[in-house]
Image (cartoon, rainbow, N blue to C red; front, side):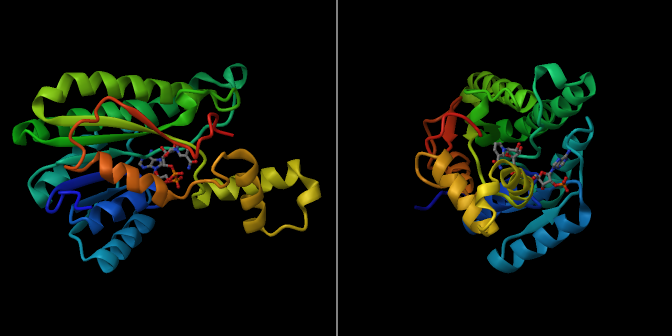
Length: 268
Ligand SMILES: NC(=O)c1ccc[n+]([C@@H]2O[C@H](COP(=O)([O-])OP(=O)(O)OC[C@H]3O[C@@H](n4cnc5c(N)ncnc54)[C@H](OP(=O)(O)O)[C@@H]3O)[C@@H](O)[C@H]2O)c1
């Protein structure tokens, strides 16, 4: 399927690894010019080199912390300086925060809110005027399936995901007349490196009877037990959906939170 995004300019936040990196690759393979951004410069530059070598795409890297109020505008300005505009924005940067309502601090809430939710507001505010000017734009916000079905051990992440879903619909209604479509993805359990590193020790504690399994076998066993399709997701599974939502083939889906969770109606 030709996604119709050749030459479009895509900013993907949190794109030095995991789902963001896979999404940037999918967009680059479809002819988009790419702006990668994350905090860690070295890993970011290495992701940029990898992407250029694999796809031949035009790629720039702008190190930034999305939780800092001025950084989103700086990243968008970098995109405009290098490529002339921003057509596609994928708000992906972030992480999960373990804990429930009773054991979370104000600092936890403030830090996670700036990283996950407020950062999206700032990126949308910086990018949307460029999209409006062209009468075409696509925004994809990475949320969690926990925004619909919360897990009480991941309260902050999931409450913010509910906020992301709501913000997504609200912005979508606002900018639909300008040719800008805005959607969220309700992500389920996807085995990125960081996630697997955290999950494997926890699973080994909970399942001493699985001590003989290799890490790979253990992840497969858990995925089979917890996911209706029989396995956890991979970054590429989310990237394929994100690229469609961000493309010109998507002409009628906006304001949606599309679940990509292998049928699981709870995160973990
Ligand atoms: N994997 C899952 O199962 C899952 C499930 C539901 C939702 N999600 C959401 O999907 C998104 C991607 O997840 P992932 O598993 O691919 O994560 P990941 O592998 O940990 O990658 C996170 C990316 O975001 C960057 N990042 C983190 N904090 C940042 C900040 N303050 N400013 C700029 N960049 C930042 C990281 O680079 P630096 O650390 O160098 O900045 C990295 O590039 C996250 O928002 C996550 O909450 C994931």
